[in-house]
Image (cartoon, rainbow, N blue to C red; front, side, top):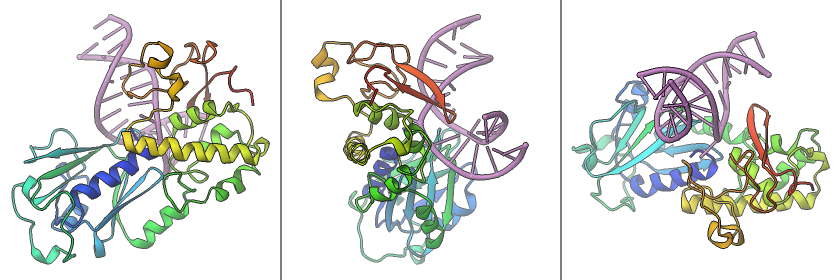
Length: 295
DNA sequence: GTGGCATGGGAAT
DNA sequence: TTCCCCTGCCACC
């Protein structure tokens, strides 16, 4: 669910299905009715993700800015779209899925571009429960980028910008990693797991971290989060620590991925057997192994 | 059926 | 810091 990898995957999935196609847009419950009316018939020109923010580009109409928050979901379907179930803030559909042609040719803003999803393929996507779904201008989009830190999933990201702030901070590294102004896209799972993987005590302050430790955190995040986009879930356990390799029972819960400490409070650490610790930090639950994370 | 909890974040205090 | 948004899943009536 929604840490940065989810959003980057959504940007890819939307682009594959919808780029270059004139789409039907609707807001069945009316919470985004004005925006959907403007978008109906427009062509998706591109998608982008920065941290947990998703941007769907519609040429001169601007961008749909989506933030899933804690509950939001983007669900895809193929074929003829059924009547929406529950609260659907925004539905995007190809004409084939919507059961009709795009409203007017005049709203089709790009002349080139058949979608990679294949001309005529029927796809739809339902957005429910987002914290944010709004139509914004290019400058407004830029303002969102400006208040976000470097994102391990964006190729042009500069980890130096994060280090400049971290290395001066008296805040704990656990809190710094969750601060989207400092690093964009890391959520509660990745923060707990990356600190475990590097053996770093989550209560160390930013200024106590060495540059080498920060570089290790960043490169581990880049690798873990790319893996997350690829698999569409968070797996952080190294090959030698998988259930198969260690002969332990696989994890069963709603996330699916294998992790070291996230939501494993009081359970034995996979590496040393010490009960995993938990504490509330900045209104979120932190998990760590007090034995393995002493650096 | 009910209540608690969750990978987030912004506004209010 | 606390509240609120408002979805889905689970444990526990």
